[in-house]
Amino acid sequence: MTAEVLLFAYGTLQDPAVQTAVFGHALAPHPGTGAPDRLRGFRLSHIPVEDPPIDGPPVDAPEITAETGLTHYPILIPTTDDAPPVPGRLYPLTPADLTAADAYEGEAYRRVRVRTEAGAEAWVYVATC
Image (cartoon, rainbow, N blue to C red; front, side, top):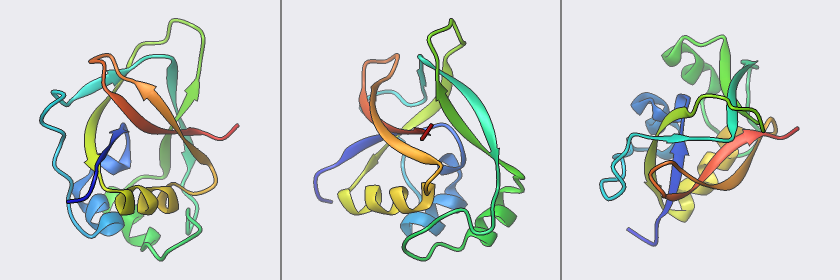
């Protein structure tokens, strides 16, 4: 495996079936940082599932929607209030995996660097607005 980065996943990217559709394989939680983890400074919201929800390399969005059964995707909104921490898991990704995740998340999300409660430096996808 090439150099890894960490991804904090709090929604559909925790689902092994979605991971397989996006990355071509299921991800193993990061062993060194003690996944699961939590993230402060955001509140969890939801946006409607669109068909297809992504632009970029082909990912079978209707298959992912059928697999998860979701009508809305979770999304993080930055907040300064005392919102409860958002639970999630840390996954190591290769640069190619990160590119696939960018394509999957689409225009509603942007990738930002965060520090989790456990102290891990990771990427997370949050609302673009």
